[in-house]
Image 1 (cartoon, rainbow, N blue to C red):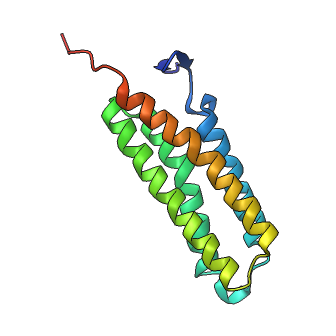
Image 2: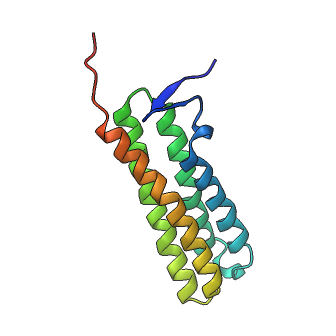
Image 3: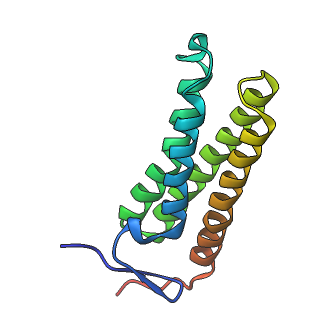
Amino acid sequence: MFMLRTVGMMRIHSFRDLLVWQRAIELVELVYTTSRNWPKVETYGLVSQVRRAAVSVPSNIAEGHGRATRGEFLHHLGIAYGSLMEVETQIVLAQRLGYITNAEAERLMAAIADTGRPLHGLSRALSRKKLTPSP
């Protein structure tokens, strides 16, 4: 059995149907691929940090989708956005430390933006939706 939700005018069967979740998964893959070649000394430092933050984005989208109320979903989308900003900050650091090239940084920043836009849009759509009183 699966939960059917309506987001905007679209029916969502699963969090996997959400474009923002799909984009976040792509970002995680890119972060993992890019950070694979960072210095070994960063394995438990920046590599671990950026990977955890990246994984947190789709994880919180999924968890929020599975929650009982729109408010809880919005709360988890906010956490996902905060994690996305952590990833951005960590990518800036990686670039400044010389762990990634400018081209890699640009590709990661584009993926962050491609995730952030639908994340913001979904949050805005859910915030605007009228609350229906409980019976």
